[in-house]
Length: 487
Image (tube, rainbow, N blue to C red; front, side, top):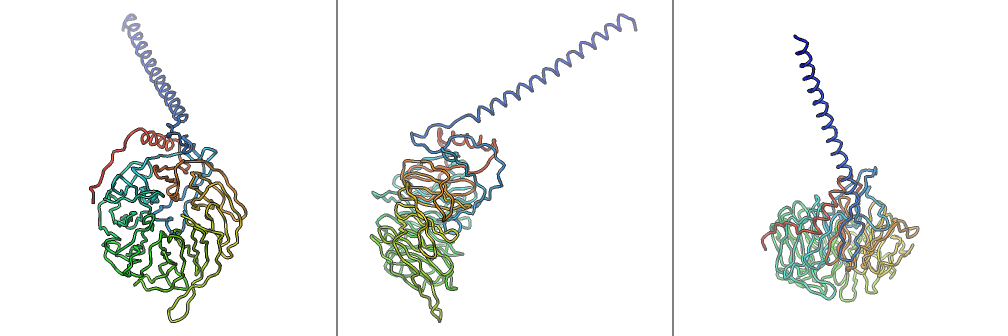
């Protein structure tokens, strides 16, 4: 090869190598630029705040920073007062560092109308009830995003100067949702679609009576059976139905209805149905509705609202309107007979609309407008706190989650030693008569027009970003809703 040709070849190779190097440098620069843009975007996303909420402070609109806390133990909330109907969530490891502005909001939604129905959460789906124009509506929302999945409307409307709309909490069991409206319409719905499986009218079918402030007792499921309290006067005050078909198994008593939900307890070695009617505390056999025993317990306007609390052979009841409370003991009398004796009775715990919670030998609840701690065994008060007006309590992981009817949300230690509040924040100006729900690391709070989901988990930054995106989406756009046909 000639010298000129060699030089030409070398020059071409040099130019090619130079082009390759410049190309590699350009790719490196492009990757670096993309990395810088990503970091800036992430920082900007972390500094974003959510939109205002109509002048009502609903907590901290801020991202949730990653934490290295223990794993969250998540538990569903399938019915009134939780898995065991006792006001205790078995969730563990949720965040308590709420700060002065409260826990971060995951999402919030306006309801279609008023109501005080509690919130059941199962498999990351939320079920509740609300008024929707001239109809009551059962709704199913995605508990993670607030997106509506289905809505079942039916003709019913309850109006009261003390708050309108449905009151009872849905009961979710075996892929079905059982709901009871304020006018006594009972539904069994498919959990996934809202399709009607069967329906009953407690007034038309059983001669039931609608109390002054609406039907409020939540349906109770036990095995294959469903228990409701129509308050009928033809031995139909209490009714047991087959849960899958709605067929009647038995009916019992002629008591006027109250607002209290029934429970099942084993006392004196006998498993029995325990409930407060408008006339007293009664115990019935689960198999046939036979009366075991009765304790007269009358209040103004039949306002027995709180659910009986059962522990061993003892039962605690409480009512407002100046009535007070009592601890009772169920005893066996021989030949299968049962009776009840009074351990103590006084007026130092008067539950007006919410039920106390028993935790480690102490009751935590509202004596009208005072939050109090009281010894279960003796009825002795240990401490009291004010600032909530009336309110409700749930307990989880050794802590009280307290919601006042004035919208004050507080976190405190569940200890009889003293009231030790860790933080508190005003979350709404609406009247809060619905007990909060804690499920899946999320705290759900309702006032008559709004449901808010607070995130108590310790998520990654990605999860926090998703939460903020969901919140903005549901504040600024309308959800696409798949609506079931009217029943």
